[in-house]
Image 1: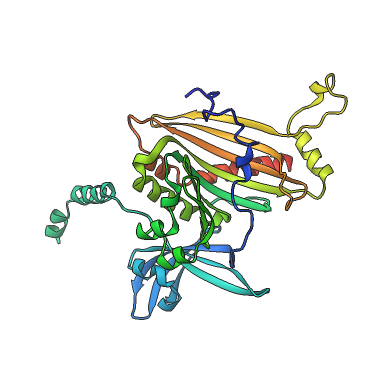
Image 2: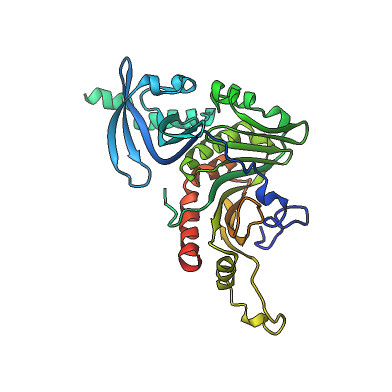
Length: 135
Length: 219
């Protein structure tokens, strides 16, 4: 690719054409967040999940217990040991009133056959059979 | 993730694919069926617009999706959610692999508001020595600047495009754009969009470092 090559087949300026603000500029989200922890589920109990968390800006680590009822209904199917989630802390605006709030959001990433093949290849390379024999 | 040294008035992290898409087919329900959104999340998505053959745009609590026949964009207006944008982008690149062209963008779009038009104009004039234009214009003022940096690897070519220009939005006074667009063009012989996306999951960090250098020097 020539560095000076045009990036589209139309005569437009990528920055000054109408696409600069071609997104909805209104902000009507109920939840606003400034702080985020990245978590991994390390254990599951009947009503709680135990997670290792890293604060995203300071990298401070911590272990916390969350009631499973705080996991959004949509994300319950993703809840398992090793699952990765974000824990956001911010505030909600309800009828003009600001309230402190937090939110758990599990990460969703499509795993395809190539990923599964990669995992199986890695497992084969590790040679679990000989590891088990040694013990 | 790196942090911006100055809080912007608006921040966006965006993945932009080019390809061939059928916008009306890619509704929130489609995303829920592919398990890219939760069912409740999809039901509660705020539809911005759906026009057959032209647009499908909607917003969830964390992500915004804008689809046109040749563009597919996923963005978040909170940089803390860059990982959710990446997850969605990588999943889309896997599911719609055959619909994608060889180019895509990882964009950091920032808006910075200045106290007055004068302070904004002063900042813009610091970006480039405009004295050489004195013979042409009596009183010249820099309006905008665009620069790019080119980089090539075995698997892709990449252009970082920097743009600083005043914002014309009526809801933002004395405001400038600080846009950093990372344009990737894959080598179809030895790479996929997914592999390039995965190896650039932290590209936002280098964009923030670049933005911070500019903010520190000029803003």
